[in-house]
Image 1 (cartoon, one colour):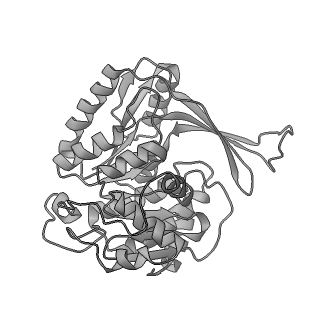
Image 2: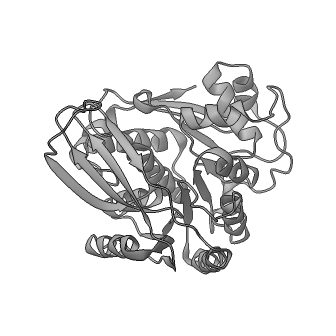
Amino acid sequence: MIVTVTLNPALDLTYRVGTLVPHGTHRVSQVAERPGGKGLNVAGVLHALGEPVLATGLLGGTTGGRVTTLLAGDAVPAAFVRIAGETRRTVAVADDVDATGFWEPGPQVTPGEWAAFVAHFRDLLGTADVVALSGSLPPGVPVDAYATLVHLAAEYAVPSILDTSGEALRHGLAARPDLAKPNTTELSALLASASVPGGAAITAGRDRTFADAAPGRAGTDAGPSGARDADAGPALLEARGGGRELADAARALELGARAVVVSQGPDGLLALTVDEAWRGVPSERLEGNPTGAGDACVAALARGLRDRTPWPALLADAVALSAAAVAAPVAGAVDAATYRRLLPAVRVSAA
């Protein structure tokens, strides 16, 4: 089972308009209401694919109750911790080209509520194959919250995927998740404020590979496992001296991630471990709503980690599923026909 964590979920509203004009008045042609937040989008995609998944996180107030009702209506398995604060709403205005988002702030979370969630998360790890930690942190949740959850997952030998930004990403990387998935903007912003010299030594103590972490799968080097222990491998050494994109991915490894997949929007995905570097590029560019594309990517990566899918096949799946999310009308959904059409045509090559 894949467990998705959404600490700052939302009631996700999507308005469809013909063309978005700043300062103009728009007639909305379609309104969609869904459980929102990055981890819930991941859970929605996995559920649509028929994958065993459980969504968890923090929900509160009337809006949180509406999110719970919508999850039940979609038959998405969920086990959330209730809080006193009101769950936020997010609004995406999507036209035929792109989308514009408006995100409300999250509710205030008390120390007791956070402690209750940590205990709840620990209980869930006994049945988890992979955990996906996604999205922003609401007020009151410690900035190192994801680091805490990554460490707990490691204690239970459960691989972790981290998809967040800013200080939450920095602290989470230091806990050494099995895979980090920033986009180019998030990674550039992090590195702009990080003191990591270009030739810095890789984080010491890489004593737990993905093969060690995955229950019942130790002893194999197949799949997207990240580094073998200790020294930097050839892909990382080359990336340090390569172009900007590879160098940034290498620095993310040096900050602690065992593997990193950088989403580059319509240009596809870049994957790097200390030993391997791969690039996946879609065969065509799609217009639509890109809001949930990164979350669809995380969904593909999560099941790939669970199944130990080799990097080329894993990246092809993640690229195709991301593109299929752009073709869907709302975040947390994918267009199945687009996914089937694009998957065989994704171009994957050594980076």
